[in-house]
Image (cartoon, rainbow, N blue to C red; front, side, top):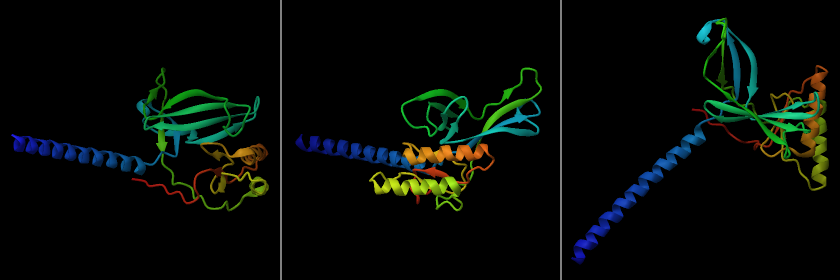
Length: 220
């Protein structure tokens, strides 16, 4: 009887072990797929000349994912655009700050990507589509300009006081902040500086980000 019980116990233990190994492999595969799946870089709102999103189209606007856009009219504020999933992204409003930091964050809306919306009069149609642009290099900003140079100087001063900047300049930008936790006082000044120069017709060509300089993006 003891031999039968011992054999049954070993069979159950072996079965449970195989199940655990199988579950672990599934979880590992899911984690790897999650790491490999790259976020979309932006979403385009396209307006088509025909119904059902057919025919020629023009791009009405483009929303860059995970970026912060400063606003100054009627007062200082900022809008954060965040990727949610394969069919949705969200926008958030920050009052009185231009770098999407602080506790004034308020949800604005969810925006759908993919579904086609027909004009009630049948004259046109529209939909949002994902755009997968190459990830811009995070190397040192090639043309920092007035605002970039001022940002670097600000960060040098901050480092001297023990408050090192957590964000760095990178190429192919427009003077916005790509950050999950804010870029500090120097970052706020950089975004405000770029917004002011943009109004004068001299946009910044670099952004600031708190992502690691050697971060790699895998695309499948």
